[in-house]
Image 1 (spheres, rainbow over the protein chains, first blue to last red):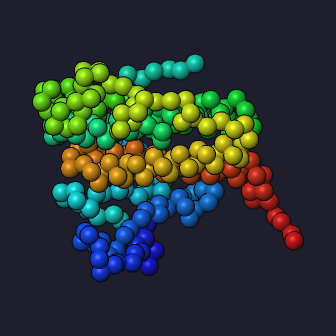
Image 2 (cartoon, chains in turn brown, red; image 1 turned 45 degrees about the horizontal axis):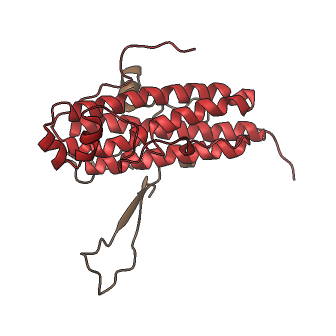
Length: 76
Length: 189
């Protein structure tokens, strides 16, 4: 499944001083995969584009804190 | 020459009195990967880059100043009504002793801005790769600030700024493709 949030699982020692975070995540936003922007990509409406920060739906990848109240999660 | 529009690029709302967030945000104001460093880096590189991508550097460099203005507004709103006691609790006592509530170009650790943050190697590909890296670093910094922040209104503005970093990175990547001049050409090996 394609996602813009990749995960990996670092080694956990039996002697770790803190409670281990068994899964680590990192962001891989959509522009990493697109290359030179192809013509005729779908657009947001002008009002939506002002809010999202981009005219192009293909590049929209909002970041939400995992601790944020009302966290909508990172879309993928 | 520039024309100034007396409004922010995106509205800045701050819903909770949390001067601590100002301490983190100042990283994007006067830090190595902050908006000031970005603006000065791009506008300075324009003179020694092929004509095809000068306009891109002008546009993005200019937009970085609009972002700088948003960060300044956020920091100001978070600190303007803080008491010295609150500044101390937020770890901003050093800043307060030196600057009162004035903004200053330094990073989250209080290190003042320096021109060494701005790279200019004169080789177009080298400089554009530098710019791509700078945009990705700024994107990551916004992620960490959003993770540290519990203010949904502030995060809304930060999310907008992070999305702009993604677009800038994309455009710099396209500039590299333009300079490589192989884009869209049929290659037969």
